[in-house]
Image 1 (cartoon, rainbow, N blue to C red):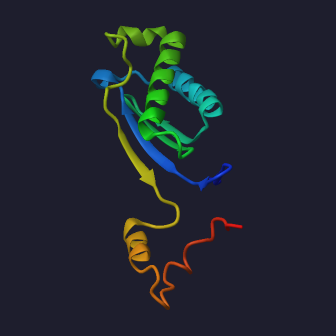
Image 2 (image 1 turned 60 degrees about the vertical axis):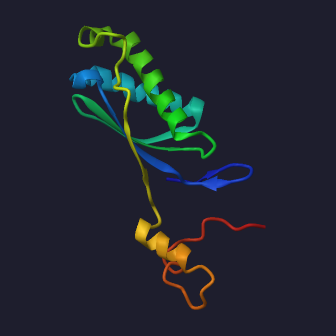
Image 3 (image 1 turned 135 degrees about the vertical axis):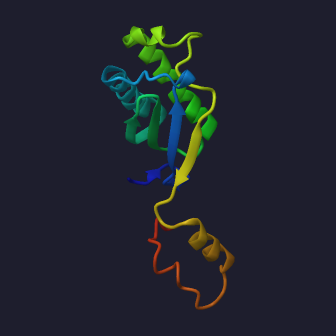
Length: 149
């Protein structure tokens, strides 16, 4: 994973997203999974979403992805769900036999951020102890991400 460098920010924001198939139908065959993954690669180029891993089970999908900070999580999830559904229906029409109403995904989803440089407790302690002399616990553990010139 690399930091995304933009003109005014540097970020490393990684999400774990889980989306369920509508009615928990077992629709993710090998062919559907291939379509899903190929679509995600194309989305990545168009919307600055870097898919690190995509894991399909019979009735749900796990996405591990990185994106830019100026796009909301809700907007990113909407892009992923709508574009993958469109392509799956287009290239795997057999999926329509298992679903009615034209939706592949349930309305809800699970999302969580993934930390690389520390856990919540460590970061809470770091923030709480800002400005306290001789507080070096986190300073020695966390790398310097970038410098301001």
